[in-house]
Length: 316
View 1 (cartoon, rainbow, N blue to C red):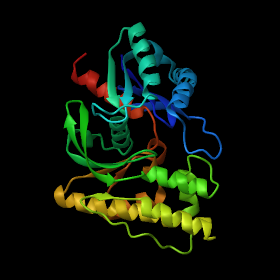
View 2: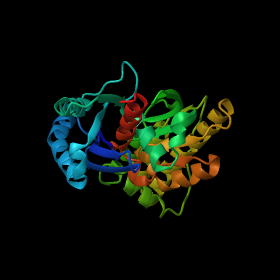
View 3: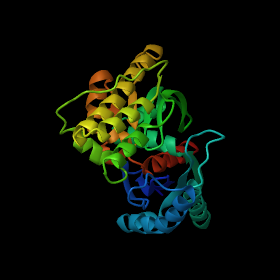
View 4: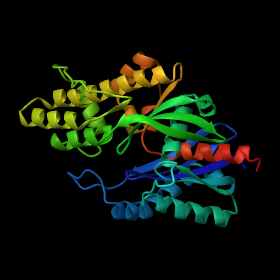
């Protein structure tokens, strides 16, 4: 049976994917959680409720696209926590975990758990055509709505083990971008709109982010962003200011990390990693590897790939 199901219920997206081990292809379906206009996210209770409603529809769409997988699933995998750490917990992942365990039990196939972060790493590596990274040490930027972490990643059997070595000490890049979008009246999540607006900027200035031991703060950028927006600065220039400031911090932290870990490849994962300016600058600065933009956002494809790897290495 060559098919592996992955499920991910993050705080932003309901998603499911099927990995075909005979072809190496992934089919995935996803849907953003409903967020009220002007809001910056959902309470966990609302997120769980939304996932419980959306996941059956997502699975139905997935198996309609890959009908042969319904009778040929070899295993089910689910992201059950944000990070692979004992104290890492978020209720929204219970929606996927409960349905995934039920499916595995009914189908009498193995159930495997991983973290949302591990899924992002695997998804980015697969999309970039660099699955070899999962079997060697490398650096990863996890840049998303709730996370801005620089990770030192090493193989851990079929999985990967990530240790945070830097990143933001306060709000994440995704939070700063979404707060910028809200200030400018853009829809949530604001990443795509902020990205597109920034490319229209004429005045291209940025905040000089202070980076120490691969760690930095974004609160100063947020304060300046609010002042610029309230002072009548054109939205395109506000967006450029925010994005270029974020990227400067990420670039500098990466340079510091490569002094500590010389020669390691750099992989960028998470929704913010789809930003055009970030991709250009980081590729030029250190040859960073990126997922395709559509595979940078929250999705279950990495979970499905890890499920295949675990099942295969266990010889089942």
